[in-house]
Length: 306
Image 1 (cartoon, rainbow, N blue to C red):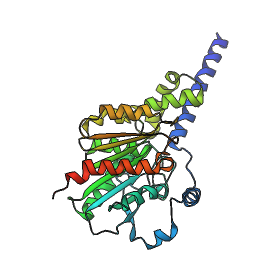
Image 2 (cartoon, rainbow, N blue to C red):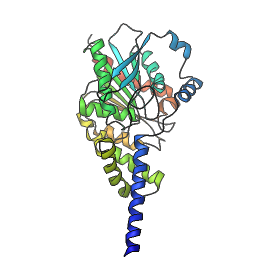
Image 3 (cartoon, rainbow, N blue to C red):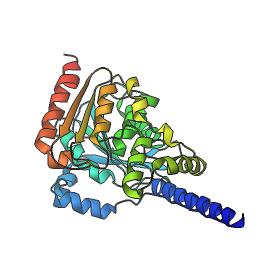
Image 4 (spheres, rainbow, N blue to C red):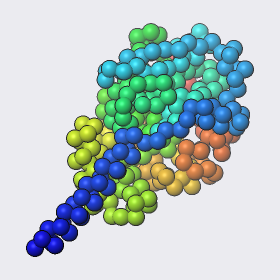
């Protein structure tokens, strides 16, 4: 009897320890060093320091509803009402968003890049893969509309977690932008974690996810089940361009295809041939820009009043 009890205790302790480790990895995922990101982007030619020095821009502090400061940079070289907000992926910072900002600056948009909570210069203690981040995105949108007017033409571009955050914002809080570009989002966080657990932990996710979710609800006050872009995608009425790399083995392209299929109304889909996760722009730049131009011409420029 004692031996059976001891064995049961060891098994329970093992699963509890594994679940704690699992939630630690989610809440405190190791971030990339900002100097590393800047060096990487400069060496790849995606950031030009001389160009940044001459670009009219201002550093912005935006208050999060959770009590910390969101650090942002507004680049505003044009006397126009066209703006795009860029939301980066997990472990990255707003430096990674500069390449996308340049894409839209070249097309006559002013741009705003910002650091998600617990990333870069922004505050916040944990990462929630879109759950809390969607409220911060709303704070950024609210600030921009308050400063520049409710009638601005607004787009949001999100990469990976930033794309999921954007879809959760638009599907759950408000369809507050005129167009969206979702680059390699996950469709459902529970499904994504199940895939990662099988791939990295080599165990059945059904054994770990329920306990991990319960601990996450205690520690960070949200459930994995609540981070599900696919469950709210039908609420988004404005146009979405979905982008994914065919060879992405971290977030599978089937997730973007599923989101595209469930989205009602105006939409486009681009599956890049080269590159893995979050590399569609880096490895297919000409095609990426062509598809963005087609999307803007079809759903944005054509919709503008004459």
